[in-house]
Image (cartoon, rainbow, N blue to C red):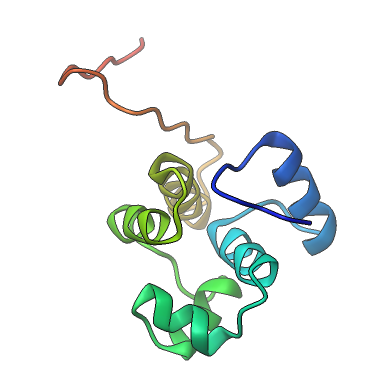
Length: 115
């Protein structure tokens, strides 16, 4: 499997088949690292975090804030919205809320709220 710069529905399915779990930010980061064939040490250095922190993210022991998710996406060359969505979904899931989070880029400076 090769993932580069775009996470498509097919990519999500492939990652979920490999990990046997729903796609999370931790699983996505693991898949990108594996696809790039980098050790946790080298990948953590690339993200500016410790190897242990990376390990905790990959194994879902630590959640990532939406701001850090965007930083990681930019550092790795991916769309921030995709990483932010997974970070927010992790927070929502952890709270036991049964809702799906969708993230779209803001256009102009208007926020659309659907009722």
